[in-house]
Image (cartoon, rainbow, N blue to C red; front, side, top):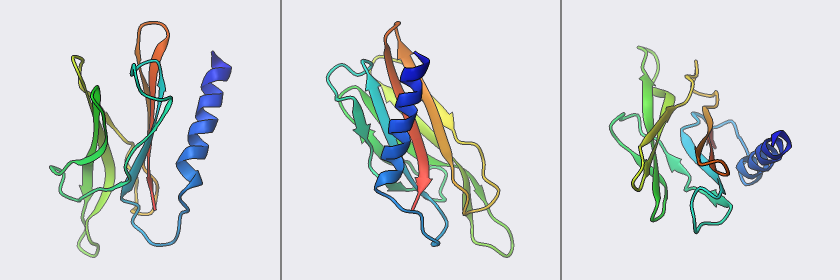
Length: 141
């Protein structure tokens, strides 16, 4: 089981960073996710890739990352920082997963202390003994 989780993490990391390179244009307010379906979503493939969305500094504005007939995955800014000398920037984001006939899951990234650090979320949702949905989201260029 541990080897399976390590392999899943390695595959996930490669997918997240294979298509995107980080440059020096900041802030990193674009969010993308990879969902690994291990029997949690009945008819979907094993690796589900989300849209790449740009978060707004408006904490009430949601961006759609992924949608199918079983779940909807959205993100929004959770914490916006503004100082006198700086434009507002997003310190953390919130991921919302609405599931058909199940509870809604909300997860917040850990805060960053400046606008060029990365924001990440990694967690899993399980149902029963053998079904799991692994979710990994990060800020990227």
